[in-house]
Image (tube, rainbow, N blue to C red; front, side, top):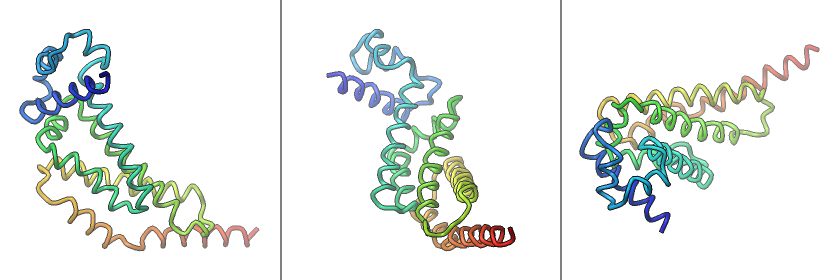
Length: 193
């Protein structure tokens, strides 16, 4: 029953977000939509923003699980884009609200979770400096976060498959090359000692 109530509250919020801006949605309206009282709402959530944070956290876990299954950052980003495509208006309303940072943090965490795993999985036998591996992952994390935010800001018109696959094609081999350079430099430093 508890999970059903939580899911009902989340569904009510998503339904409203697909129709109106976040700033116009109230706890009272969600309670009316769900047929629950305020105490029930506050038993599960501190406020409306807690629902959004929980939603993003659960999606983050799904994306990381998708990466762990496929070992593909591209496929993981496509998993991450599904909720956006299913709820474009809702996402736009969150993006253009005072809680935009929740969405930005979600995208940043998705990018980071995927890229650190991906970079660490590439040629683990290369003795690249761990700081360089983290720096490379952070660079791609920031680049991908910026790309996704730009896509959302532009109205999510392009298909994410095209953007993600195109970036994957254009950047293919760049991480491997950076890791080789790091390993070569580390080897050179060690031989100079």
